[in-house]
Amino acid sequence: FCQTSGEYWLQMFDSYTATLPLLFICFFELIGVSWVYGAKRFEDDIEYMIRSRPGLYWQITWRFVSPLIVLVIFVASLVNMGIN
Image (tube, rainbow, N blue to C red; front, side, top):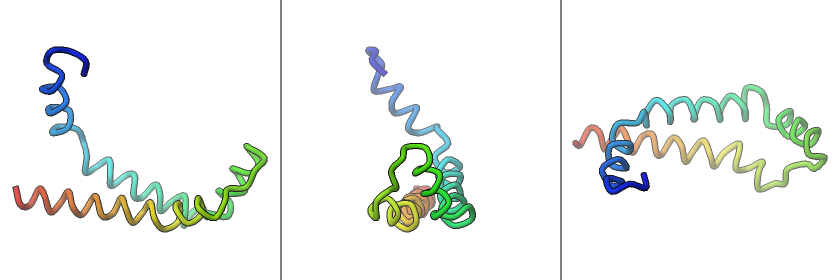
């Protein structure tokens, strides 16, 4: 992106990357880790790896905030595509 045509490359990258499939995969990965595998087991794994249990902030973010934000972005992208 650091060329004389950087703005063109940035616009092309922004327009033609796989935003919807990537958001779709990201949403279901978040759901899979938080709810299917289980946030408790995921926290146990992190505690095993770094010898420290994730705080309440991370637990709430993984379970609720991140999936909600990704879902909102996905729906907004669909609405934006429908308008355009």
